[in-house]
Image 1: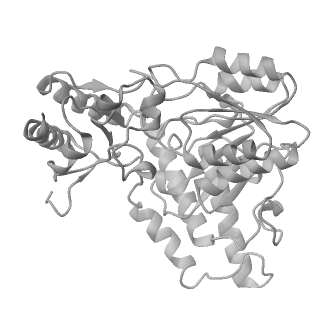
Image 2: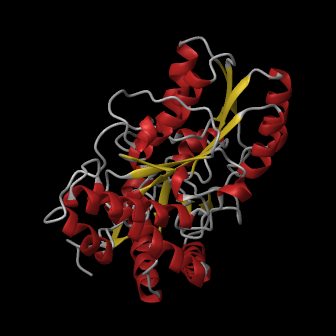
Image 3: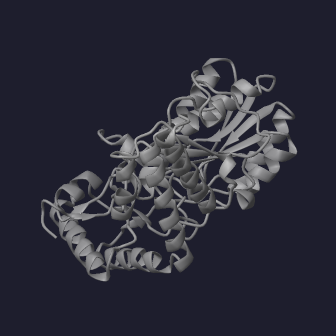
Length: 382
């Protein structure tokens, strides 16, 4: 490890592309360049590759291949799920979401409010989890007017897992469509669309070692959904535009490999995360964990350094590449909206650092990271 190539602990922001993924997609950038809508041999080869990739993505979340739509990523998938449901179920004018959603969910919900929809923004407790009773109350009060419930599966900052299945069961009693943004959880924990009981699920390539610019939306058969972009008939007309075959192939291979890792269990990465946490709290009095102690992703450790800014700690620890929060929110000194929603005081929240581990992290890596962060904290603490 060198200072120009520090230990990468920011896998919740993006992941390195798996070398096997790169090798699998390259032929579809070179010789197998056909348009999958074309009838000739080049097109047929591209179509076959696309459908094989669709099957691999579906297998990871226990869905049918026909239920998978390829998108350009999580933002497009979330917008299609939320805006597409609103258009398809316009007779209902209420939606339910949470205060800790990613902007790719929050902003489409904001836009619907501007258009006259009523939105219930579910709060979270100090542990970062939505309370099922709050969702039940919101749904009961709205009666049969709720078109959509959109609740992320795992928070991108704290890694806290949300009670999606419990909320989905309540929502379906009221005839609502249920969407979950599973960008952070797919590939890190087992995800089964039947167990979660969701109608729509977003997954993202660059969160599970595929390239940026590819994602997918699971759509349960019979779910009302309308396209919000217009064009050709690709992806059942719900996501028109010539498919990105090479990256879809890469996503399929990444999903296949993620499935193998999950079959081996998440115990190892969980142990590495806990080892890192043990090292930090042994050496730093007053360091605090953000989020639920157990209901969170096995790779994610979100901590608050006392008497220091998280950005200053990371700047003084060049051996470690990590984040002060979600990569989509960086650039300012204001506290994370997620931590504010959890009731964390502003000054304390500014000490936050998110350490998100990758599957290949070793015990030696953990020791190096802990030593660097402890040394940095001692240098910058006030």
